[in-house]
Image 1 (tube, each protein chain N blue to C red):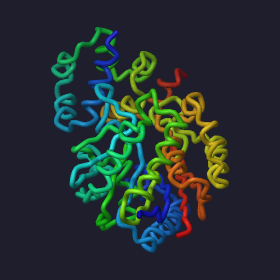
Image 2: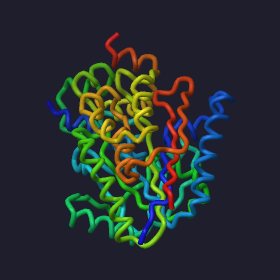
Image 3: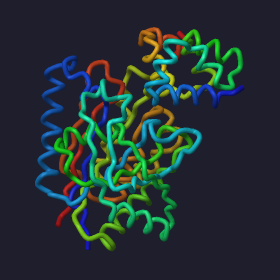
Length: 277
Length: 83
């Protein structure tokens, strides 16, 4: 039966790849060390598949059709989107999708109460490509992309996301044959384009990070009310972390880091979880 | 109110490089393809981020629009915050 061999959380702030020349040596150094730590963990875990949890940034989905949870199930997925190629400085790449897992998870979810949406044309925007470019730059690890709605409210509830994570874990352990790493792509607060843009809600970020460090999942769920998510801003990614915690159960991270760059509107929060195998 | 049409234009501009070029060359030709109220078209034409934000345009898309139209970030923040 399958195993979750690694949990990872990493930011996808486009500033990380797009403007490294404007980044201070101190911040660049901290990011290099932290991403290096995650990359090494991923290499050592040697998974068969990387399940990526993140929120589409109004690339695939809009108010005309806004799913809560959407799996990419095509044979391959390509990114970044043409609109962000020049800025991101990430070469366009086509990644293999682990369709056994993608379709297996889709069917398992529907049978057990998560009515996933699915797409044969999911574009991998920067939310996928920024961490991928740093964690698996050869882009040769099969992925399963899973969109969790964060930018087109109403969002799914935190309890629903936690349950989704639990069901992903159940699927992997009971129905998948292989080793899976799960990446949560996103940081906590971020009000990109909103009135709070330009400042980082460090207090809120660190409160969440403390809960993450102790794997206090019920408190994470309780805290992530619609009001908290509103405070955290239009591009907050708290639900993504809660979904990952659902996959990992009560496992505490073995590594965390929190890095703020000058003029950023969202901090870089990174973490690694190493399940006992 | 046709806020959806405002957001739809912002979304389509954000994702379509050809439309971005066309909009920069001839915004009126693009604006008239959307079912906009006069005050919405005016706010878009003037890149009035404050007005668009207060009518409820999606803030992430609005930020991308402001970048496309070369609105200075300091002016964008001032407008959106209503300073």
